[in-house]
Amino acid sequence: MQSYTSRPAYQRALRQATRYGRRLGLQEITLAFFVEEIDDENRAQYEVAYVDEESGVTVRPVFITTG
Image (spheres, rainbow, N blue to C red):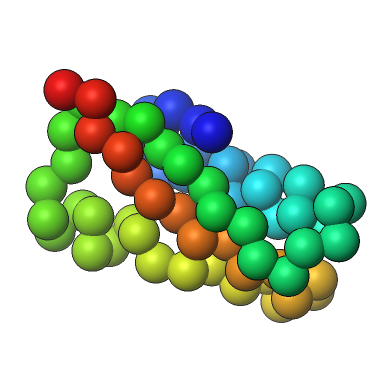
């Protein structure tokens, strides 16, 4: 679970989720971001699976609106 604040923070969260998934022995992990709002364009851009090349862990980001 993360709060999305900026593109660098988003990238850090993906890497952190990758490390966590690897420690748990998972091939795939979902990362939830809580945001006040997100438009369709940004959702399409950021809710894309990220595959870590080194570990093979897939991170699936999901944006949950709170506003």
